[in-house]
Image (cartoon, rainbow, N blue to C red; front, side):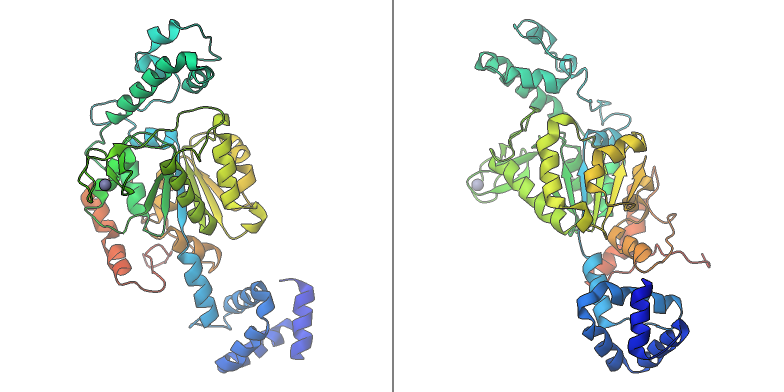
Length: 413
Ligand SMILES: [Zn+2]
């Protein structure tokens, strides 16, 4: 604590040493009303109060139970959302050995050959900056002359991604979905159906699952435009019984328009609302490519000034090197409030499933040590996962004000 403030407090309390000041608080503690009054008078400086209480606790002067006000603050923080943003790298991590039929999600390079579009592309009078899908697609949108080729390309992309099927064993997507609860959000840029397929089967374990948002559209989602109902593509609208229609995919052009389509606009509204309130923000396998400039701008707007985010935590799960990642996300990160992991299982979500905000608050604000060995492990079976999270789900169903968790470090393990 700032010495000036300390001196001021000592003066106010009529004591001459810090030890006496602590003692004074100790006396006040005997009578909660007095201490509460004292703290309420200082309402204009909440931060200072928290600091005083923290110091008193460290000194062993202030014991449980906590002041009501502090419980409120703790409950509010712990109930804030954890937002996870997924890029292509997350789908690669979800099926490192390919999907059920050994099909691999592709990064954009070499993609034209996979779609068997090489001949079509070579036969038109257009040169491309590179073989990257983004460059090819962007060039095709520059003139209506190429509309037929562009539409053919869109159709092949849609069909290509529709073929993916999630393997039987748990994937990183299953772990991720089961690590979060309905206060949280997973927003993905990916077109493939793997996340939603994982979601469907996670529902068999619990329905307390995070919200999903598909920021560039998705091949697994269908909607009824008349009734604004969505579900798995291939399903039917519960109200008019008509088959769901495809949602559009947002293809890679340099100036993406997130307002043009209602579905995509809605998805962005969801991410905006969650990000605004988020306590934690995890970016998983998303490299923020230059063609996504408008996406980054929208996210940045929702996150706000990094200076106003001095309590929040950002996590990056990515295999790229730290320098590159920090440079990519520099405008989001407040000083040291970030961590970078090369695997999902080393992240807060993987280590402290279903209690990532609770655990992080306990680590940072309650200054508790966490045990990161009790979370999810690579190669678990669905039964192992269910066993691990069962008591957590039971507690969530009882709707307590603050959820407990098993991740506090204790010596008598
Ligand atoms: Zn309908």
